[in-house]
Length: 145
View 1 (cartoon, rainbow, N blue to C red):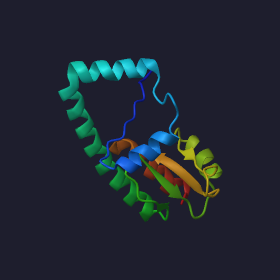
View 2: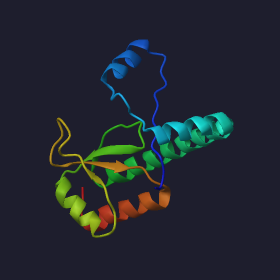
View 3: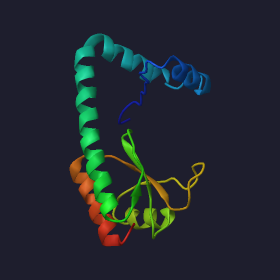
């Protein structure tokens, strides 16, 4: 196991919180992840908050660089606040782009099955600079966009 996935929402919007709570799965975090995050927050809360703060800063910087690079290559990138971007190719389908990228050992997610999206949509995780540069090189060399 490489890690545990734990998500959270922080909002002052009571209506938003109630709406999301009504739509969520009953157990959106498994018991192992729940135990681990409770222990980390109890024993190392200050360190965890600092790590999350620094991680958010890195994601913000890298997401902006990735968005700019993809846009320069002719890819439509939608505004995001998440550690991934939604993109729409203009020349190559999601399926074909995944095939070409996979030949370079790079994986992106085909988003064509998501509601209201098309066969040209992909979801790309924001990674560290070196990985993002590798992805952008592959996009350029493989003629994706």
